[in-house]
Length: 194
Length: 234
Image 1 (cartoon, rainbow over the protein chains, first blue to last red):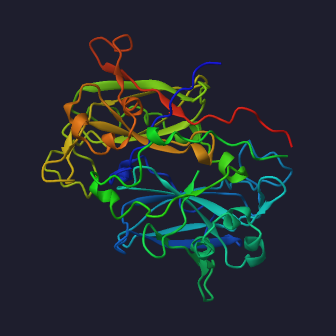
Image 2: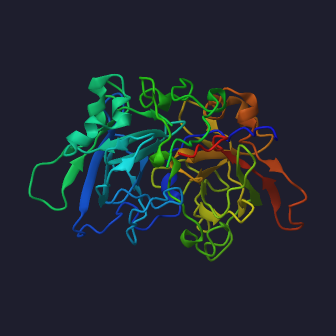
Image 3: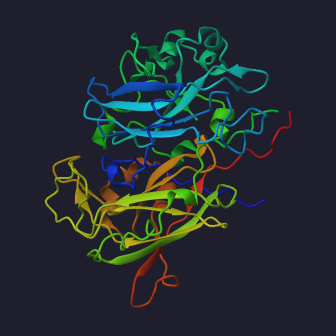
């Protein structure tokens, strides 16, 4: 067997990523008028509570049925035409990002476990030499969250709630889930070693 | 079905830490608590996969995106994308972006008093071929000051972004040029503890791929994490 090649190290995305070739509609995985649409709104805040206004947030998620649009997901669960599960948003001057998508279904965990509906998030920014990885879970999935193997693996029970979005009150459509990301401090978001 | 077939973990010395005090912006942005280990589940071994559908005909040639040619030293940047086992990554989208030949980004917050070039935007895309090979045409970017201290200058670099085959293989990095004296004093480059790993970010002048009377060529291979050796059938 040939020797292992070393991986290419990560480097920061830096502050000038807006000159990348733009992704049309990358922050809207579905149209805002889609009956299943939800809106994820959040802010990214640094250790001084200041907005991180130059970051890129990417999400990866399964569709409403819990199926990933990827060759590794070979289960007989329906795909949804036009839904690829990837989104990208850039934070504004208030550190705010918005993504319009759908709430994913449950997906299998390892072994016999089931993972609660969740989205995988990557955060890239100046000052982050490697991107940060976290997950968004949903407050209206309490039973599923209680059995989610990843949430249960977080030993500091009090920190698990940093991964659960907050449903905004109101009649607006689509429904809004707030998910703030604290890079440091008492409310530091749980970040994963992937 | 068993989804425990993950990707190999990174060697810590081959990746930068989050907190690197010499790079001042890490101080308020690096998490203070240890990361929580995440087993690779179906959510991590799947990921966004894009190919040719995202790439326009001139996206790979940053010298042909305007009416005229950009100023600067024309370069070809090429290489292979593979995993740690040497397996090529075919048909994969790559994104790049860079400063112009005066060290200025076409970006509203870049106030470095160096000239913009009306013929250079600085963003590109391409797709790897069946053997994982890619090729960009551009101009060589220049060094620029970046405010990390009173006299801090980034070595010339090109940003690269790749998805790989899965959420777990996502990579954004920077490619540097050989012999750049600023590499020795750059806190971002030197944040990587392992010297051999740092050198993997430095491209190599390749006269064999240089096009005579037209452009120098630099080779830059990119290695993403490989799969764990033995898939378990559940």
